[in-house]
Length: 226
Picture 1 (cartoon, rainbow, N blue to C red):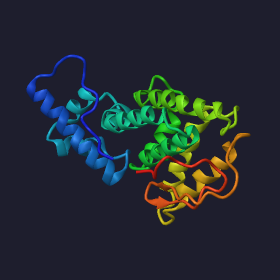
Picture 2: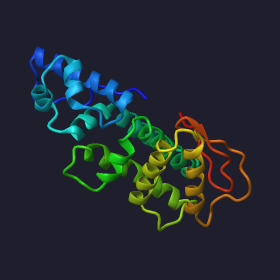
Picture 3: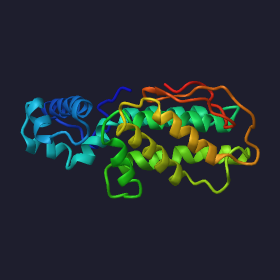
């Protein structure tokens, strides 16, 4: 999933400052992909051709840099949630979106852990990722619950923590590419409400780099996850 220059500071930057900002984001994306989100900030600054002080002027801490790098992915997830809010099968839309969240969280080593640890910390720069995702997911969850396909006592906070936990578990088991899909399937079994479809649905769901087994008795996604 592509990442972008993301959040632009409120005041317009000088041309040289803008170049530094963009170079830092580009090097951060590369470093996070190669080494995870705990990549050395000093190395990121060096590869961008600036001093560490310049990095901190643009991004006061690691979470601020992570938040900026992940804004395009966040925008994509929010946009998809709005599209799925009109899905004919509300539970299918929720399932698809959860799979996209897991894929997103699993793209960079350490991201799932960071999202989990800051899920209720509104002082963290990552709250700019967590809060919009919770709000978008809540709309999909409410529709699925209203249809009777998902239990009424399921909360979006629990669901977001579960999806991040699945991504984290998959990150820790790179030799098992189907783990994320299997764990999502188990989660869906626990979410089923009184009107959830019964029987065996032979739907295969791609999550991250692996393919889950069939979602047996759970609602189906509207399309395979990206």
